[in-house]
Image (cartoon, rainbow, N blue to C red; front, side, top):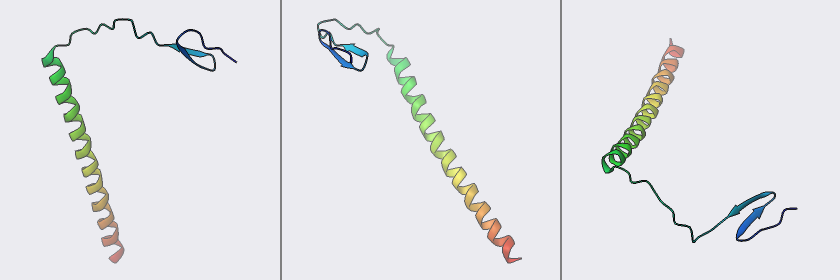
Length: 72
């Protein structure tokens, strides 16, 4: 069994130490780059929705075709 040391949280043999007094520095991000990234994510989401709709339409057309061929 592992022990907790300092301000860490112990699970099994993995310890995560939380030192809230450390300063966290984040690299500045270009706002245009961030905006482009968000736009690209939205475009991907919309494209995935369109693909799902098209796949559904193809399935329905195939289903109608199968039923039509059974009537012949």
